Length: 317
Image (cartoon, rainbow, N blue to C red; front, side, top):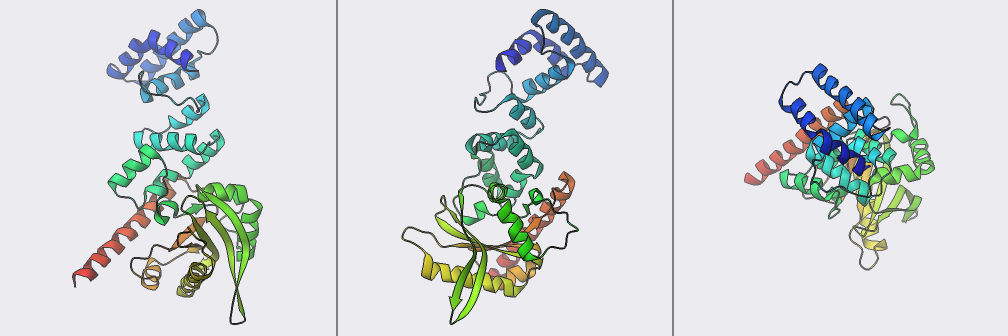
């Protein structure tokens, strides 16, 4: 692949730069590439049709000669990566494709679900730069948790009125896809894990273990509006695992409430300040458009910023 690209690049760089720096009309660029297609096909044979040259030109612009290429990635990976003009996003997806051994199908799915933006949501500028350069590195629970989680692989529509049992069964049936959406380091432990307290039985929907963070991850599913009782119940589950089930070398467990909708104020005033164990995240049953997801992430960022401002104001009093 790369030999073919750079044969083309060496012989046609002047033409590309003429197109970029001189006239930028689409018709002029099309004329150049069509002429190049005829010349290169005559000289080198198949593989230099107009559409391929467009992809090669885009590749040269995104990855100039001298840039290191990753041998683990195929030409199809690079064709997908070239969709991103933002070098930070492109770098993140490159690193994650290699580190997580993503197929091209999985790369496309993660790009469409805006994984970079979801992970970057709660990070400052330095954190976003590190994310772009290193990929997703798990050092704390906040590095792992996303909001929202995208569950389009279940095959439901947003109009489906689901019971929590139906959602749980669907996630178990598509466990491999769910593990990919959860992210790095997850292994499945239990479904409907029972806790008995003074003769009363409670059931945690899903229990995982994250071997990178070395902790249990407890997930409860809520198909309606999240309530303060839901958060309190998760606090109880986390406390129980902390006091009764942690093994030597484990870090404190993490609780995630996956809900259809939530009130940021209810979450903020129910959980203690400095909370780093319990998280409320929404789920989407369909793959949102880029515009929809971008708008949702903007709202979520504004909520996070407002919460930080309120905390700072409270500390100043």
